[in-house]
Length: 608
Image (cartoon, rainbow, N blue to C red; front, side):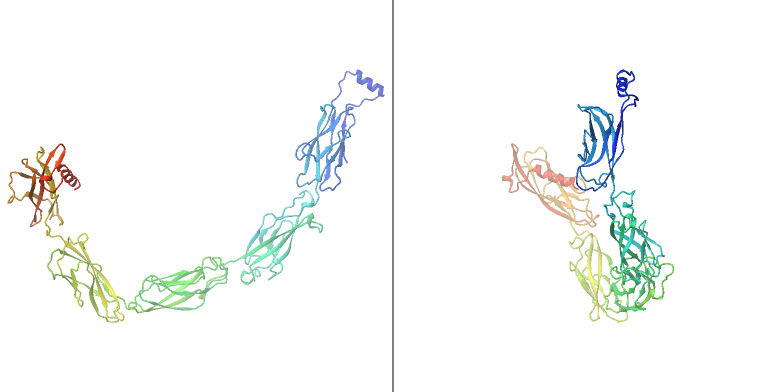
């Protein structure tokens, strides 16, 4: 119980009559009343019955009819209804069990009011303090707890820290914790591999570095059950537990060693790929760079024909041929190979003789196909050379010089069927006229393939390519386009058609072209041909003609030496053109308008 006293005005000495008389006659105003309070202390976790009186407010000079009023969080503010006050007696009571871990203190206010609820005195703060009880176990909140320590670490090496939390009052023994290792698994090589600081929770090693050897342990992982006990670790304190996992990390204190001093391998000449897997042993952790191997060829590989890589699955060294070997050059190879770890060794460990090995490689002879030299073979000839002309003699050699084999030649691919080859000496000659304008010739180059076959069992074959560059000869006459035209019988514009010429040959055997009327057959008083440029000319009339079909022989000549000439009949229809209608029926079967022909001709000219 606590008593709260509200003290009145200044004390007045004398009899009751004098006091009342003084109160009626004294001109001195009455002093303002003050409220003196003391905190109320309540233990948490109290049991029934409720409500339970916890304190009392006393006002020795309270006016008659005045009442006490209590306010604040826990009364008229959330959480409401925990505390209340008897408005007449001033007795303060609690209505339910309190939890210090939820709310440790309540700040309330006491005042006196008149019958109308108006405040006479106060409000005066009233603090309610909840007294802690040891009702919370220590708990480890930051798990999982995993620590690492390097093997061979000195005694006293700190591994990790374990700290627990207690929700009780930290200013009391209820939350003062002490730590202890209850159990260690496994218990080898010592049941007490680690120690925990009872106050700080630091876990340290307590065994010698020799016992902290990962390679000699049954399991390099330890699990410790850690206890945290409040009440300074007294027997009546509450307990909380957690598991700490400690991993013994590997350091590179074992060098890799080859399982053999010498390895043997065979490979066919000309082949590439893995020829042998070199095996090593390493006692370190397979998940670390202290175990992973790195191989190096330190001797016997001047031509860089070999490479070695680590198989990440089993740590073996995969020795490969990356450049084909030649039996005729060397039938045997000897390599010296060393192995190291990705991580450096610890200072007191070094690589020994077992970290190097010798690999003996035997190259097997294979019947190799003959090789053409040069490849491709290239010649330049004029087109239209006579059939049976010799182009060249091919040369193929057999890499298997020790086998003394003979070579025969044959045509493999000859798209136009122009070539033949002597099977014994390799002479290539023509069996037809070479034509640069043939569809089998691309960019003036004709391509053929030949085979060279040795006499081995089974025989081996080599392929050679022949590129024939054909020089142009003026062997194609030019031709004109278009070969038909229309014109109106009453046309004011006597232009008939624009002619173009083309030639399959190359310059200078093409343009400039010469256009003219083949005068032996046509009178020159009606038609006229005028040059526009090197490739086009204009055909026009000198007078209007009657409706009919006319055949105009046009002769076009290229600029070759000697030149080539072509005569082509240009069919001209003279049509009736009235009321914007063109009628060529009486002139013949063709139905082209003059306008269309001129437009087509001009478009062709513009595209050149």
